[in-house]
Length: 452
Image 1 (cartoon, helix red, strand yellow):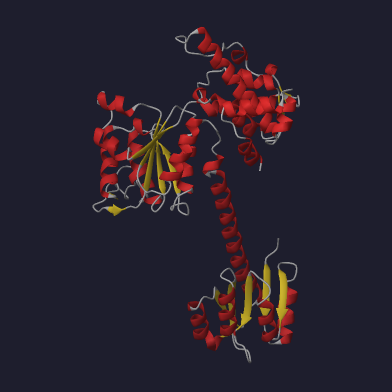
Image 2 (cartoon, helix red, strand yellow):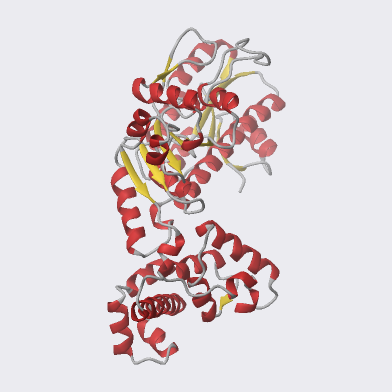
């Protein structure tokens, strides 16, 4: 939509000329009577006000005061005679965006207004993008209703209010970065940057310069100063992913930054203070690495102020139907037999593997419904997993419980939490279906919320 421009100019001929010039480029409202313009401002909203400074009864400074009193999101440009530039500068000190001295060409004014509207468009796009990001990484968008995931939600709720260094552990693909982002966008630093770096993906020498920055000439190729990620994330959050792969030298420097909240860029003779919330993540056992002499014990205690372990997907199989529905996202229907098959797969790649599987199946399948034939052969041949130390009865009970949870979740998703419809689909008596829901601690309310 075009921006809205209000023109206030007491010279009727010049006011009309300005209107005609900018018609088609902006949505124009123009007044030669400042009093009428004030009435309009008090009941309507515009993006930019272009007003003359020297007008009878109500001058440009009064217009500026009225705009600033009523809206903090409207820019004001003052038109002034050359001899009144000092007054226009005073207006800028009071909140005007800019001024233009008469006489001016229409091209000069057009360029000035175009810059203002471009700035406003970029600002609004940034605000909208931030809203999308914050919505995407809200804790409730980390899907799962298992007891293990409820522990993760409690962790996010509590720790997001803190500023302590946090450690997130879990296998690859369990969603460690997603939890880190949820901590950031639920906390007091959400309006500042969230920065992530994978310590295992960058060589040691490059990792040091990426984290701490360097000064011009500090080494061959350092043609200018470079700001490190700690400085770049100042006021926000820095995620050190795969922290276990950081070298001993990097570990020592990280420890000092976490202790002192100061760092020294490579080649610099002075230190820089930083205010960064650090979150670390790893898929390895740091205590085991400490015992092997591969990870500093003092750094471990510094990053392990608060911690959470993300369960692998095979330990929360009851969440598979919910995740499957989220990833399919109404693009196709799902055969209930697929739930049973996926519930018995071991998921070495965890949630990431499930998401990638869905994208592949949805892309390659021409059918409206995802069926067993759309799944990879290795999934179809996987036996039901159970602890081989279990008795026959215990193993059988586990398989039945996993199946019951999966199919109850699935039909509740399809019925938007309507218990009667779900029971009818499974050809069960409603009372028996409710009994199963109570047994497996499944609430229909959660499924209604998920659909909203």
